[in-house]
Length: 209
Image 1: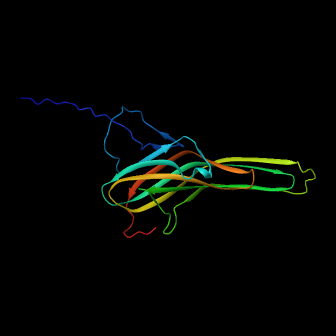
Image 2: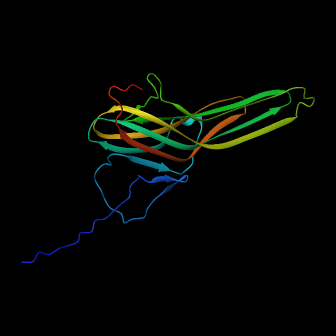
Image 3: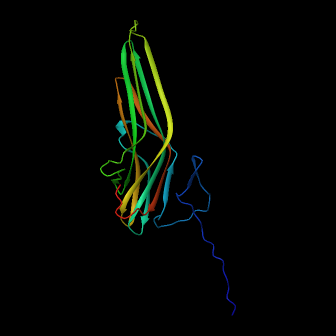
């Protein structure tokens, strides 16, 4: 009896592992497929919405993803982000006003913050702005100077998490704005396009960061 050959069609899907090309994220449109397993090996996450926050907002979650490791691994965690700080300063008459803002970014694995080196807290400055203006010898006490600064840049940093056990792990990227301002001056921050790439790797035995 002649065997019958059948061609099996399998749905394809592209997850979060998009490639960051030319400052954007390229996605291939394929038919959706359902999967009930956690991603393994190299994973990524990306977002383009603008997160605007103040010091009162505390840590803001920028990105989050999960991966599965089948054996104890070291993880290379690469984060890139557009970062902006706005400062607004006004002086009236003889005056001295200032505003400073610093955005720090950190990465945690399973709720534990990853240090940069042994003993560090793992917070990395992605952008900083300090503006101060002092006015003297103003004859008119109502003479006012106002200055508004708003700049943006893209930055990146790599963290390494050593000896992560096997299983499902949650990786989260957070940002915090620390600001110091006088009187009516203020500083606020915004984070735009951003990416996270998590790649299992093998450091040398007994590696110490």
